[in-house]
Image (cartoon, rainbow, N blue to C red; front, side):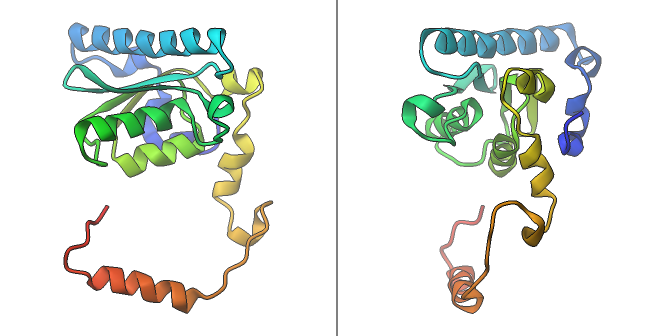
Length: 182
């Protein structure tokens, strides 16, 4: 298991073992997961996209979809899950996606997992895992390992400065009566 995979608990247990509520529920999950896999196939075999697809479903309706568009958009954050989250949030009209399920052709990378937490998506169903992605050249193990390290131990050089000035803006925002918390 990849470092940090246990952060979603039950998601490391195979789907077939987790879903025992009803046969209907199980079949819906597999249908949506197959659609995410189909997105990955369609776009990665017909363009420069990587082999990843994702859907976000709310009350049985697809409200967001995405496929890897990193090369096409020249954007390292254009992962399938991120694009699906952006589309779903726009479609629903809120950044809080707490009543949705994300289906992905592959286990989300650390960046996508963080976005899933920020969007408050309570459930993720995926097909392939980080080991499968690593086997074809998509290795995020270093990122997962680095995230648990203190800044000074990470391979990216970083420095903190002007903390008081930065904190002042945060305090002003905190006192703002009409702020939108997230």
